Image 1 (cartoon, chains in turn green, cyan):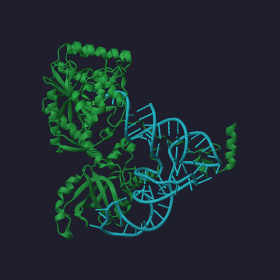
Image 2 (cartoon, protein in one colour):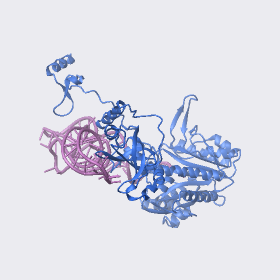
Image 3 (tube, rainbow, N blue to C red):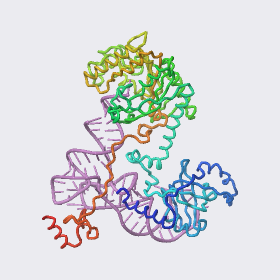
Image 4 (cartoon, chains in turn blue, red):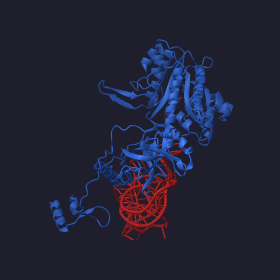
Length: 546
RNA sequence: GACCCGUUAGCUCAGUCGGUAGAGCAACUCCCUUUUAAGGAGUGGGCCCUAGGUUCGAAUCCUAGACGGGUCACCA
């Protein structure tokens, strides 16, 4: 079974020996000691004392943490224990712990990985490290699994993702990333609250998947007897709230998409979507810049961040380039090609891009954009005025009906946000759903949007002119923490099931199948076991044949 | 879904031409009362990812599969 290896057995027997000594290896009612950071602040003065008196025996302090290193030198030992703030060194020896405790308990039964409580006074070692001189040591929780090696640590990606707890113990920067993530989410929430937005929670289980083009996960509600879809986006519900009179709402939550996984896609991911009545997409771009300024100020981040081999300058205002302009000025696509369906198709083929000849101009432009522009958008850049045919939920521009009043924000060559003036014409929305539904029928396109009649009905009651935006939180955290895989900013990323732990089959004689271990000996060559008593074995084998 | 790479002791990794397995750390037994990846002496520890195949003989070569990483495709 999972705990039957030699190292674990050794540790389990140590826990047992603690019990025999009357010590519970898993005691209750343990309180957290002084945080390590506080220990260093509080006793910094000890370092300033006279050279031969660098200690303060008048103080008694308790620290709690996990043992990360132990160095035993005969009758004295140093260890480093780690709490959520960091590492602190402790020192303990035979004469300053209770009688017999050092030799029988502390030295023998406490080991790397265990969580302990150490009580003593602060002193400074010969090498100048502020350390706790222990008068008492207690076990807080016995670890029966050994930790990975102290120098190289844990590098196996699979174990790091599957056993994130171990990753966090061994790789402190991982914890830093997730603390940063938590702060970013908290700041985003506060920013929108401060701007008068109301946080809401809309359904995660949708009767009709909507708000994006994506394959949904399907589940079943037994009592209602109906299938439900894990939401691919909250958009249509948030807009219903706008119809209902909530003029500024946001939701930070998970979306689920039943699609491929790679460095920027996890089947469940976090986004914020927000909807702002009586505002337009230009207001959204300004708000987005303000949000970045706020996050950078609160986190005290420099305006220029390193991302891989890129330097990203987050100084606001961000660049704004229209979609078609970006094709030519950034993508280097000739001007006549950028606005011509046939020439665009030909240009794509010339550059080795496989394209469907039936694509409309907007889709051809989207291909050109993906191929020649996207990766070049390093500094934050708003791309504005998208082709209408790739923007099914956006409002049409009054000046140019082929253009949607929409933008996307790119940085480090990746899309990070998408916002637009919301389509609020119920009949237009009905027709666009219908077109999508027909496309679904005709081509079997699993990603095409479903007709959502209730949403159309809601729009029928009148939705104020509204601008809405979604920001991918995971990707944003990647940018701000210099992580290059979405798995590194999601605590428990999606993984295939681990091969199940199985109880090993009982050892049995290869000839007769005898499972009595006392009568077995291991095979001299190769694997398996044989009976010690060959004669009995032969008898049993004969009987088995009958 | 396609292709490339990886999988050997608890961890990090070697393993030559095909000859049945090695190191460091960790563990165990000793020595060591101010160490910093502490040090010194000794010992134990392996389903070489799985299943087939080739071979007198496979960690090593071949086939299939599992899991992970990467690239691409799909997906915004």
